[in-house]
Amino acid sequence: MVARVTTVAFQGIEAVPVDVQVQITAGNPNFTIVGLPDKTVGESRERIRAALYASGLALPQRRITVNLAPADLPKEGSHYDLPIALGVLAVIGALPGDQLDGFVALGELSLDGTIAPVSGVLPAAVGACALGKGLICPADSGSEAAWASPELDIVVGRSLVQLANHFKGTQVVARPEPRIRENGVALPDLRDVKGQETAKRALEIAAAGGHNLLMCGPPGSGKSMLASRLPSILPPLGPRELLEVSMIQSIAGELADGRLTDRRPFRAPHHSASMAALVGGGLRARPGEISLAHNGVLFLDELPEFNPQVLDSLRQPLETGSVMIARANHRVSYPARIQLVAAMNPCRCGLAGTPGHSCRRGDRCAADYQARLSGPLLDRIDLRVEVGAVTAADLILPAPAEGSAEVAARVAVARNRQAERYRALGLDGIRTNAEAPAAVIETVAAPDKAGARLLGDAAEALRLSARGYHRVLKVARTLADLDGDDHVGRVHLAEALGYRSVGEGFSAAA
Image (tube, rainbow, N blue to C red):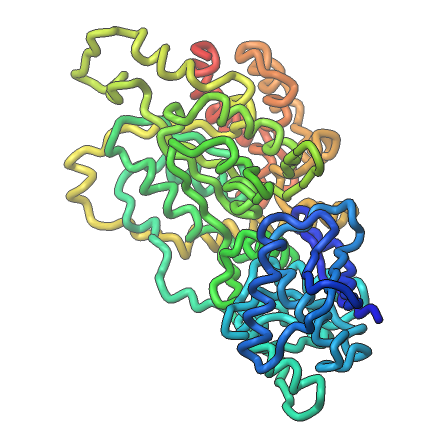
């Protein structure tokens, strides 16, 4: 007799069905797992043996063979414990095997028979919906699975005994309810920032259009302070965005108690981060910071201090909105549509261009420091702002009358205009101007005659690349949306070009 239980293997955020086949035959006592299991899956034999013993059962003294099909698909992770254990229980008659046919199972077993939470429950629940099956998962992950669909049949268990009693009909397990993470800590407010009106204006434009932003200024000028307040003016995640973000967080094991939140991700890795940490990779090709920031913000402080090769690895994801991690035996793709916000000092000593300061190395100090950033990476940054030092006169002023709430209201109106525009064009996947294809932006951001002349002259003077030309149009389109204008005018292009020209010295140094 062969018992079958369905589980999943994860390829990126996609859940691939895996057929767990358990057979017990005559022969010397042995427990074998085949089908390309990794070390974690191979060790499940001992966890299952101990969990069954703690539950009042014992493995029969016969030959047990477990096949994980398809056999050529690598199997990784501890979530195979529960489906294998359920298959063993079914084949020895301790569990009705036919009742397991309509479910996908995953979970990790403890030695005392309890079921521990695992990562990837939300993608597994979505995969179970696609297969037309229910889901068996740990009790602590049930609320996470409940977000997949209100019609999904979910059976949660805290132990093997509880699951066995449920399927025997002696105990009823209630369906879990989806839960929201309480946003108890208020986000930092823009009202805390005194002065820096130009930088705050650039921050509003970046939030409204989803544009990449680079702030350059001396230490203590408020660059990190400004960046940390960007989430307070961004709109909450939409339903589709929330599902995408939560699936990535589920794979990475970062969904606390299975609770979801509509706040956009804000990731700020240290500048010592490796390429695998930032882009993704490692032994199991896990998502990196750029994927964990999907539909949110990736903040890179002290930008030139990052390894140049690590920074250049962001160039392709910034264009495509996804990252492909290739390994010898498999390829994994993670979504990575992010808004890049970066901060840097103008030079190694940090005070280049500051009145009254003279560096002993002269202009070379700034040139060498800025040359750590490649031209192609800078070309992908739409807004470049110089953040000057804050004076004592600015600090003694009262707090600004306008805070994050007022700015967020304008950003929401501008984003709604963009969403309606691209929805009318049949581009449901495009939500901001920064995401719009070049061919579309040339149509929706076509300038008037005066603006076209200005753009042509500036493109020649600034030597704009084709990418730079289209990104200027995208910023101008966002400025028009903030003003409530249907057409892009000369004033919008002039401001957009002003943000582009600030970093031309960086490109020359690079």
